[in-house]
Amino acid sequence: MDDLKMVGAITSAAAATGAGSVTIATITSSAPGILGVIGFTTTTTVALPIAGVVAVGGLLAVGFLKVMASQQSESQ
Image 1 (cartoon, one colour):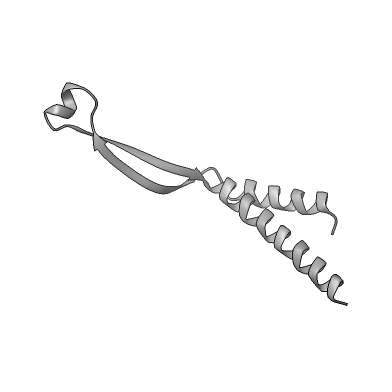
Image 2 (cartoon, one colour):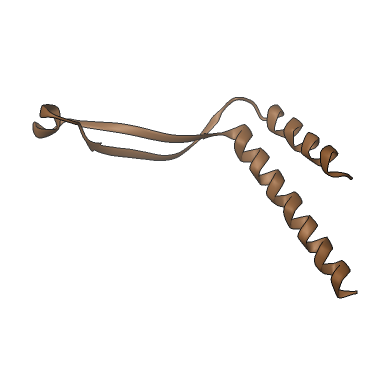
Protein backbone atom coordinates (compact mmCIF):
# COMPACT_ATOMS: atom_id res chain seq x y z
CA MET A 1 0.00 0.00 0.00
CA ASP A 2 1.53 3.32 -0.97
CA ASP A 3 1.93 6.22 1.45
CA LEU A 4 -0.95 8.34 0.15
CA LYS A 5 -3.43 5.47 0.52
CA MET A 6 -2.21 4.83 4.09
CA VAL A 7 -2.58 8.49 5.06
CA GLY A 8 -6.04 8.53 3.46
CA ALA A 9 -7.09 5.47 5.45
CA ILE A 10 -5.78 7.00 8.68
CA THR A 11 -7.58 10.27 7.97
CA SER A 12 -10.82 8.40 7.28
CA ALA A 13 -10.50 6.44 10.53
CA ALA A 14 -9.81 9.63 12.47
CA ALA A 15 -12.84 11.34 10.94
CA ALA A 16 -15.05 8.37 11.74
CA THR A 17 -14.20 8.51 15.45
CA GLY A 18 -16.26 11.63 15.95
CA ALA A 19 -15.69 15.05 17.41
CA GLY A 20 -15.13 14.14 21.06
CA SER A 21 -12.11 14.84 23.20
CA VAL A 22 -10.00 13.10 25.82
CA THR A 23 -9.18 14.94 29.06
CA ILE A 24 -5.46 14.65 29.74
CA ALA A 25 -5.20 16.76 32.90
CA THR A 26 -7.18 19.04 35.18
CA ILE A 27 -5.06 21.75 36.79
CA THR A 28 -6.24 23.75 39.80
CA SER A 29 -4.41 26.89 40.88
CA SER A 30 -5.11 29.99 42.90
CA ALA A 31 -7.07 32.71 41.17
CA PRO A 32 -5.19 35.83 40.06
CA GLY A 33 -5.25 39.04 42.07
CA ILE A 34 -7.32 39.70 45.17
CA LEU A 35 -9.49 36.63 44.58
CA GLY A 36 -6.43 34.40 44.96
CA VAL A 37 -5.46 36.18 48.17
CA ILE A 38 -8.83 35.42 49.76
CA GLY A 39 -8.68 31.76 48.69
CA PHE A 40 -10.50 31.42 45.38
CA THR A 41 -9.15 28.96 42.83
CA THR A 42 -9.43 28.44 39.10
CA THR A 43 -9.47 25.17 37.18
CA THR A 44 -8.03 24.55 33.70
CA THR A 45 -8.74 21.40 31.70
CA VAL A 46 -6.23 20.11 29.14
CA ALA A 47 -7.95 18.05 26.43
CA LEU A 48 -6.98 16.47 23.11
CA PRO A 49 -9.39 15.77 20.24
CA ILE A 50 -10.01 12.05 19.71
CA ALA A 51 -9.51 12.38 15.95
CA GLY A 52 -6.01 13.75 16.55
CA VAL A 53 -5.15 10.89 18.89
CA VAL A 54 -6.30 8.32 16.31
CA ALA A 55 -4.40 10.07 13.50
CA VAL A 56 -1.14 10.27 15.47
CA GLY A 57 -1.44 6.63 16.52
CA GLY A 58 -1.98 5.55 12.93
CA LEU A 59 0.96 7.58 11.65
CA LEU A 60 3.21 6.16 14.38
CA ALA A 61 2.16 2.63 13.41
CA VAL A 62 2.89 3.28 9.73
CA GLY A 63 6.30 4.72 10.62
CA PHE A 64 7.08 1.71 12.81
CA LEU A 65 6.14 -0.71 10.02
CA LYS A 66 8.33 1.18 7.53
CA VAL A 67 11.31 1.04 9.91
CA MET A 68 10.79 -2.68 10.51
CA ALA A 69 10.56 -3.37 6.77
CA SER A 70 13.72 -1.36 6.18
CA GLN A 71 15.57 -3.25 8.92
CA GLN A 72 14.50 -6.61 7.51
CA SER A 73 15.58 -5.70 3.98
CA GLU A 74 19.02 -4.54 5.22
CA SER A 75 19.62 -7.75 7.17
CA GLN A 76 19.10 -9.98 4.12
